Length: 425
Ligand code: NAP
Ligand code: HSE
Image (cartoon, rainbow, N blue to C red; front, side, top):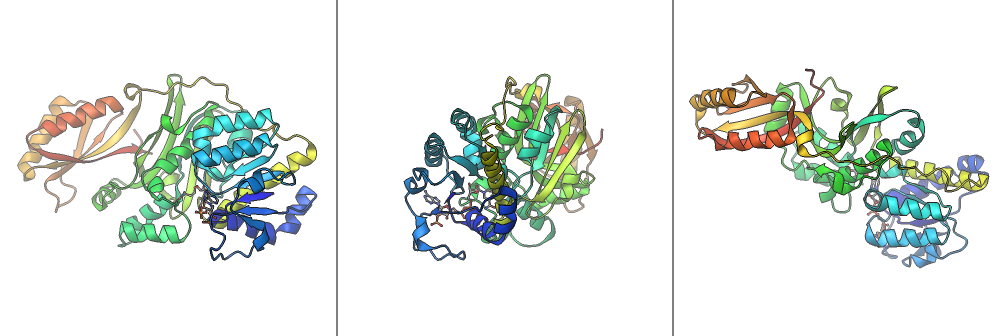
């Protein structure tokens, strides 16, 4: 095989292959030999020892090498990487990748090309790090009908939110820690702003609903606006704030979102902490199924990559390469904001104390019958704040409601809005 990338994931792949060679050989029937490794900087100091003559900075040394049957892509990036992989597939090479940005953007094109050329493309590590979720969705749910997938699919942001919920460290310090541990993307903006999760939920939604979804179908928001006060209010409601990626399907269509959600402590996702990820799959026959484990980091991710390498090698041995690719056959219809109904938490700041609060409450009582004010003075020190828990309300109606609230003369501002999950009726 050729390995493209020797960073966090690539060095984990090398380590697992070296340490478990005998075990892998027993399953595959032959050794795995990493014959070339693509890097950007040949002179970089690395923890993993690789013979210098295996290293190259020229992707063609891997893509065009007739002795390389399988390429493991862990360099990241989208446009250039897509060109490398399409070229490799044209040359008959099987692909294993951890690249959600690539699969969430050009997955359809890459899988189609692979089918044409009888090549395997496996991407288990692209979602959930070390958690098996892609193969279960494709194979284990084949007989069932999935209607909702909801999960914590970004290790970096869950690590940050868990620490902020318990410790007194700042956002910046915790992010730096996540970067040092190899959890964050090279540009952590993708993690923080929910973009990484959006790629992942587009992949999961495509597989779960057998349709072609991409990142452009996902409505996404990150964690940078979450405040300590929001976390405090969440706890008052027995909720944790988690960045959730959610794909839902019903008879009217599909909705895909990534956003910070107040989720009730009784829900299993509320207690997923640190770099761990968890994905709940809801389907007609089995009901709720939960996949849990370490969602980022060198060895957990490499575990999924090497699992895919074994799958490719077994298919090669059995002469069935390119036959296990996921099929998409369902029509895609993305719901509009008028059709998406959720419950929300809204925090409002009044412009001067308790008299404004009672004014706001009476104004809201009269105007918005979907909204229930249930506590006016939860924090003694925050006498100019009220929180609202809505009933099910469409996204478009919510936006109208928020605009009307902001127009009230007694309202300073709408400070926060969170979707709520796991709340019983
Ligand atoms: P990383 O630590 O930054 O490593 C990237 C590696 O690719 C480095 O070895 C780098 O070379 C090489 N590289 C990058 N661009 C290149 C180019 N244009 N030409 C040649 N070599 C290039 O990244 P990573 O964390 O391992 O992530 C790799 C991929 O796995 C990404 O798609 C990421 O989203 C995905 N992933 C990561 C994790 C995780 O926990 N880190 C988990 C799941 C999926 P140098 O070493 O010379 O700089
Ligand atoms: N940056 C990603 C995360 C890596 O933190 O989840 C795993 O895909």
